[in-house]
Length: 450
Image (cartoon, rainbow, N blue to C red):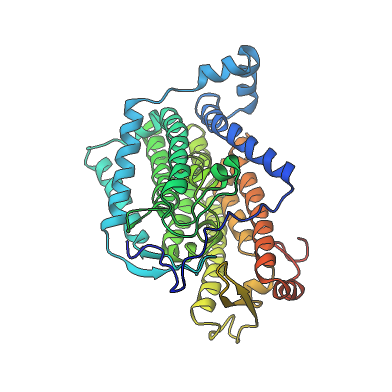
């Protein structure tokens, strides 16, 4: 996959420690330990509630109350199975092969804190098209029934919970004994290193980027595959697909198509360029994305809602508009960076701040901070249409139960926290230039409010 992250001509600097946390030490440790211990059982509880408790949180609560928390959880937690393992392994190997073998343009990511330049092969859109075409063809020609995936969903999630935990342990060990670049290092605390990760750009050999695989090829691709799976399962159960499921599936697939169309831009975002490969990113993409992000569709399988043509079309168009605005925000910034500010933003020359900073090896570099267009409204305006997009592919479930909206609530919390972390990181990186930027663009996410 192109070249690995390549060091600058200067002598390689000592391996830097991971970035400092942006919250207080107590809050940082409490949140890390809470997420490490609570996320795995939550995935299983959400699946059980959606599939076996009619979507009712009260029903699941009563089960746990009647049987006791530990015994109740044990009774509903499916064990990993060979079938689930085969499905996961087959999918993972297929996506890894596509990542390595499909052609794609060379793309250089942003300069890392240590001065390295990661190189990628941009073939995500091709992999996405091949994956969906293959999956639908296997179903259409009777070779594999996607309903099998839904029928073994609890076992699949359980296998992912445990398997991905082991995967993160191996990443932690690799970061200590065989880092792929100088963008790695230890904080001196094993919990922080495991949770946040040791390496920024871990690779297997020269060509297989692990974060591209976990985030893009497994996580996002499994989201698309499961969205199609839920649609097919409802069709097999009822002989038809409700318009609510069609709107949900269509909006999710449009959003994921947008993601792969723009994938090289994603490689410049916080997830790839700043967050290291640990439990937070990798376990999240391997387990949390396929289970939580797909949950509105999982709910709709057993709860078909007939919206009617007018309401269904209104929700669909509103969702498409939000996805487009989210895309245009990212496109605008990416074009601004690509042209070094020599472009038009909303028909005018962009306004900007020229900010200088130093890498960890002492080199002085320059960045341009866009202060017009979408990026003149707030510093992270693109999160607003992203949250609204999630709402519009969830709202076809209507409001009989609360749980389908958990993803929207989670995404809102995640993005607001990410906006704060990104602001704190940029403040540390750019200093006085970031203060000038914040004076020019005073709101963080929501214009006039926050």
